[in-house]
Every structure is written in C-alpha cells, then in structure tokens.
Amino acid sequence: MDGIATLKEIKKWAPDTEVIMLTGQATLSSGTQAMRKGAYDYLMKPCDIADLTEKIKEAHEAESIKRHPVLWPRKTVREIALHSLKKLLPEEPLVKALVMLGRESGEEAVEEVYVLDNEDLLQGVVTKRALINEAQKLHPEVSLTWSVLLENPHWLPEKAVKQIMRHDPITIQLNGHLTDTANQMIMHKVRCMPVLKSGKAIGIIKLQDVFQYVEHEIE
Image (cartoon, rainbow, N blue to C red; front, side):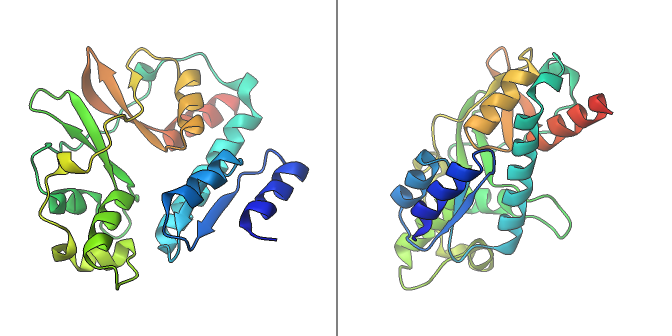
C-alpha cells in the first residue's frame, strides 16, 4: 500500500489515532490530500528530526485533549498567561523572519512568526515551509531542509515579508473560551495562536500550555 492507503486503514481500525505523514513529493497537494483523508499533519522529506519530534508531541497533546473533552474547564484565554509575540513588520526582509524562526540549543521549536503593522494589528503569518519554498525556487538543485537553510541565509530571495506571508492566520479573542481555543487549534493543525484584544495582537497562546492546565485541573 502507498501512504494514503495506509492512512485509510489506520483511520478505519483506530480512528482516534493521530497520523503524521512524511512525503517525498515536493508538492502542497500531496500533503493537503493526506490531511483531507484524516492525517494530523505532514512533513516534507527530508525533514529535520527536531521538527518531527515537535510534531509528534503536538499530535500527542491534541489526541489527549480529544479523549477528555468533558473534563475541559470552562475558562477563558485571559486566565492563562500569554507568551510574548515577536514583532515582524511587513516591509522587513525574509532573512529577518529566518532569524526569528531560528532557535538556540534547548529552546522550543517555532514553526511560524506573525506579521504586525506599526499599530500591532495582525497582518499575516510566515512559516518555515514558506521560507524553504522561496529558497528552493532559486536553488532547485539542492534538497533543502530547515537546518540547511539556516546555514545558508543568503539563499533566500531579496523579498519583503509581505510578499510571501499568509493573510489569514487563525486567531482567538482574549475573552475566548479555552474550549473553543483548543477546538480551533486541533481543527486547524496549529500549536499556537495569536490572541487579540480590540483588534490588536497582544500575545500568543500555546496548545501545550493549555493542555498542561487541563492536566492540572484533572489531577
């Protein structure tokens, strides 16, 4: 069986099991097809082990939350401490996004950064995959991974962040319920979301933190 057929069988016999696909086809359609068939997410081969590890942790947390929906407390986002949101301006170069997405040893892996204007209004989001794709266009002869791109930032084109950012990031309001937050993050396959207050981005909330709070309540 190929990957999609295997995914179908896994979902048939164990529908609650999260499946992460690794695809060697450098096309967006191959990954989105898998997600439409029930995959939790997908990574392009060759993938970084650190990214795969983070994706496995994320899928495990999402699966655990879905197994205990009745235990979810009716609390709001404002009751959980928010992480600071690094400010990336639309006019800044792609290499700035690369630096912000990089991490020191021991730091948590980050897959996306958010683009704000001068008034802190959310404009879009830039992902690791978007940066890799931009560099890959200029260097099709190289099999690019995130670690390779970090070592060769000059491979990125001289573009502004606004030229490649996605304009529809998933967000949550400060007074939003954690139940809705978890459901949105699981449904949209994201591990963090920007939190808005009066239209302005004031921080981010992470699925891992929300899940740890639920575990504390259960105990």
